[in-house]
Length: 253
Image 1 (cartoon, one colour):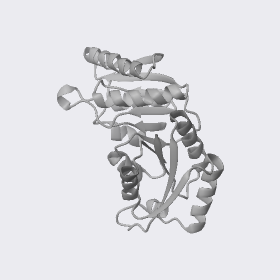
Image 2 (cartoon, helix red, strand yellow):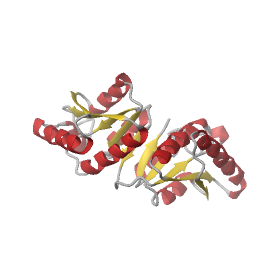
Image 3 (cartoon, helix red, strand yellow):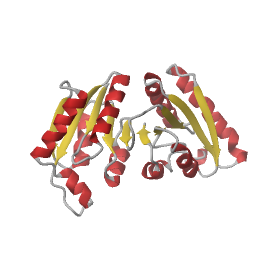
Image 4 (cartoon, rainbow, N blue to C red):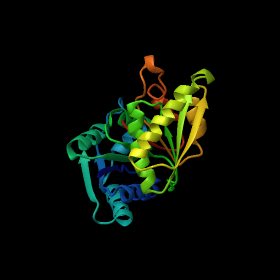
């Protein structure tokens, strides 16, 4: 597995981000490539902080790569490219044949843009160094089942506890949530994950997820869910959850 790690100084949490990336890489047997993008970004397109992110001077860049080498080792390929940040990241994913993207949530607008367009599993770092409790949201759609499989592989490799969460809008629709849990457990069994905790929430999907995720290190979900005719659960709330959640996020299309 090839993992692209986006590092853009200045970033106060870079050491924790690197340690988490190291754990994920080791768990998945992945090779990590660190990408630092240097660019001049027009103010009308980004916030002042985003502009600061884009303007990486040589000295800052050197410090970042020294930290990468110290934590991840000399074998990590370190690249530096110029251009608009989001475009460069997405272009590198496409051309480099990467299977996963990892980056720190240092700017909400950048996070949203990358999350919207990244077609590979995307890990968005927010807090801590532990990844021992996973919350996987499911609505029974194929998108959410793919997310469950990927999160299951990662949880198994990291010996993390995994909880499945499905949300019904009312007690009358509980059976749909129960069916979603059943399908997700079958998907997890395909990747040899059998020890799973189950949770069914009742109410507004986004509110239930945000209330539950605070107790977990990682929240995994699919950006797309069931269509409106099939009782939308994940798709229409994923961006809201992405914006408001406190835990680390794993998005899997």
